[in-house]
Structures are given as structure tokens and as C-alpha cells.
Amino acid sequence: MELLTSADAWISLLVLTLMEVVLGIDNIVFITILCGRLPRERQLRARRIGLAVALGSRILLLLGITWVMRLQDTLFELVRPWSGKDLILLFGGLFLVYKATKEIYENVENPGEHHAPDTDVAAPAMTAEAVGKLMRAIIMQVVVLDVVFSLDSVITAVGMAEHLEVMVVAVILAVGIMMAFAGPIGDFVQNHASVRVLALAFLVLIGVMLMVEATGGHVSKGYIYSAMGFSLLVEVLNLRRKAREQPPAHG
Image (cartoon, rainbow, N blue to C red; front, side, top):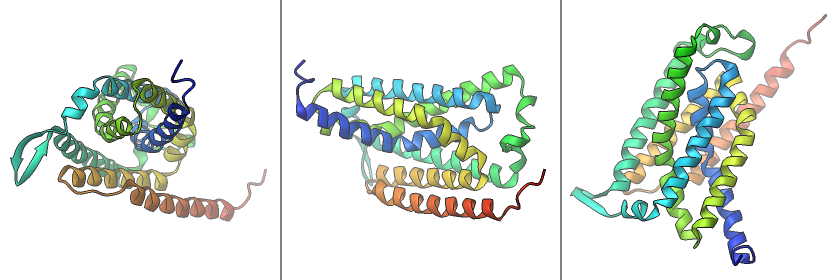
């Protein structure tokens, strides 16, 4: 009851929720790209399952906050001190760069595998067993990357809010918002090949940023988001121009 009547708690909840939504853009993009190989009718469900898994992992990290904070302690020294957090960020960044680069190659060299909604050819050929196997692989990759994505946001949340209850509610609200928009955002990324490649380039930048932070440097996410936002705006304008250039269909 004290939290419900505390103005500071409500302000912390609002700020943390907004922060989690912004930081969760990485998750939506990554999950969307992974789910792109599933049959179209299974993609939205897979995205929501991925976000639910992300929610669970973030709550577990919050509940194990004592362990998370200990990850900042030095484990060994090799040129510079290395902590558990540094190692997680380093290997997570390497994995993200590898995965995003591989997907960029597949999108550019084998565009037929990433079909548009009106030419859904490859997806129906997948058996139920293959879909289930791919779904499990996607969930495992989401779990691994979400731990990496969540570390900084969880540690930041601890510095911004005093109560665990506020942090957990903020995470739940943020993931709820992301689930609501996972469909439109995911479909937009999947339906436009150039936007998909741009999103993958965004993930490469995030992976490099994680590796830089692991080695003691710091890159503001604001710069990356600003650059990608500007690039996305230009791409949306290009898509609008192409749509207007298409001749009207005559019945």
C-alpha cells in the first residue's frame, strides 16, 4: 500500500517502463529476424513466445539481483580486469555479430528463402517436426541473447528504483507493450527486404557496441538509435516513393 501511494514509486515505474520498451527494441528485431524462417501463420505466435521467454528471463535476473551485481566483480586480469559481466557481453556481442552477419548474407545471396507474404512458397514445405525443431532453436537463442540484452537494463533498473516490485511491474508492462506491437513491427520488417537488412545492420552495431563495452569502452545507445532511426526514416520515404511510382491496377 505504501508503494501505491508513493509518487516516487509511480515516477520510477513510468521511467523504468519507458526505458525497458526502448531497450526492448533489440529483442523485437532479433526475435522477428529469427522467426522469419517459420511459416507465416506461426510467426506472430513465435514472436510472442519469444517475448514471453524474454520476460521470464528478465524477471529471473531481477530476482537474482544479488548474483547479477556480483557479475561486476573482477574474475581475472588479462591486460585489464575482466568481470563476469564483461565476458557475457563479449561472447554475447560476438554471437550477435555472427548471427546478424550470417542472416545478412542469407538475405542478400538467397532472397528466395525470405519470401514476401504474397509469394509464400518455402514455408508450407516445412513439416510439423521441422517447425517444432526450429521453434525450439529460436527460443534457445532468444534466452541466450536476452540475458546479454538484459544485463545493463537490470543493473540500471537497480540504480533507478529502490523496490523490486516496481522493477518487476515495469518489466511486465514493457513486455506487454512490446507484445501488442510485435505483430505490426514484425510484419513490417518481414514484408520489406530492405528494412530487414537494415534491421540486421542495426543488430551488428548492437553486437559491436556490446564488445566495446566488454573491453571497458562506452558507446551511447542514443547515437546508435539516432543513426538507425534516421536510416529507417529515409527507407520509409523510399518505400513511400516506390509505392507512388507503381501504376494503378486496372480491373
